[in-house]
Image (spheres, one colour):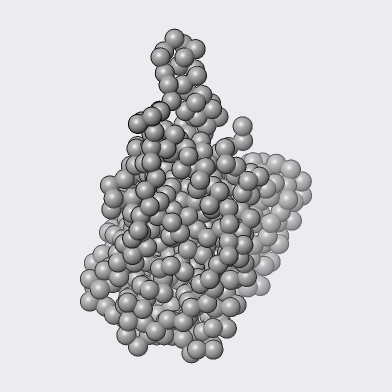
Amino acid sequence: MARLFGTDGVRGIANVELTNRIAYGLGQAAVQFLGKTIVVGRDTRLSGDMLQAALVAGITSAGGTAFLAGIVPTPAVALLTRELNAAGGVVISASHNPPEYNGIKLFDGQGFKLPDAMEDAIEAFIAGGGLEGAVERARQQGVDATMPSAGDVGIAVELQQACSMYVDHVVRAVEGQGIAFDGLTVALDAGHGASAHTSEEALSRLGAKVVTINDDYDGTDINVGCGSTHLEPLRQLVAEIGADVGIAHDGDADRVMLMTAEGEPLDGDVIEAVCALDMKERGALPGSTVVSTVMCNLGFVHAMRDAGISVVQAKVGDRYVLEEMRAGGYAIGGEQSGHMILLEHNSTGDGLMTAVQFLAAVKRSGKTIAQAAAVMQRFPQELINVRVADKAAVAEDGQVQAAVRSAEAELGDDGRVLLRPSGTEPVVRVMVEAADEAAAKRHAEAIAAVVEHACA
């Protein structure tokens, strides 16, 4: 059996790779490994109804109670799990992926994603036939085991105020700082996703004038030509209405990308830089340290260094960012993709909370969005994907390592080299950052040529 879990739950083409059988098994596993009460939320994908039915069947067949939150952002499920003292939470969403995909993410009772060891145990449970398989094996060993039946089966309960509870939480987090967004005009792209139910309401309650696009959905349009991965519709809206800021979410709103009034996109590196500086100024940055990934722009590292802030760089993936944050007691961590974790406010990536905390930081600074974002100067970056026969050989190859050392020596503190094998393809990603674009391109092409020759 191929590995079920990736870096962000279980994901695949719905009803082909991610089947009802898998969803049913994950529902049973949620009860077996987390506990009897499970919050369930989903995004707007057409396959969400199907997978939720299978998942809830699994939860209830194991004797659990499923609290159905409906269409809500992923961070809302993490919040609701804590607020309701539930044993765990499940989100049915493939985040920024196209509509034909779907995914299932699990949270523990504190709203944190599960550790690798528990995911491995869940995979083994599902591979062994789930609860039915466990009962059958027990019977074969002479143990009197049965599936829950009669009064022991579980139930599903609809949560009527799921979105409202999340919106209230976001609004309180800003109002508690004595901040309001009166006079701010916001262009919002909901990406035909779950944020259609929450972001405009929260921003409006905080005083902003909000004009929203792509807040309708039919289950087949989520992330299609819109949202945080396709910013042109947002750019057009910002210009059309003269917005002070643009906000774009992905399908489950655990990410956010922002845009200046001039139409310049602000990715997670810039957003994290602005928030971190504000937190340091307020004495809310433990250890004067932030967490990012190895893929963050060198300009972010330099901006933090110049402000007296250390940067811990984790492996790519928000779960690894969170691991570093919890291990070091840090308060903020994020990825260039706009996936930001602010542990004071939520236990997972939260696109809406990130956006409002960024706007609060800008409000305190007295600057425009563009002026605040200028704290970080992006280094030109060249990325080349090289197809290879053996990804693992790259790390050991002497010619490749010599080429990397040569480039690093020439770049010095004004550049860096990163070789990163793809997790899903026979590809090595060669990334070079430098003070000027020509140098980044020259070094990346030179190293890529050596990689291709040495590891073909």
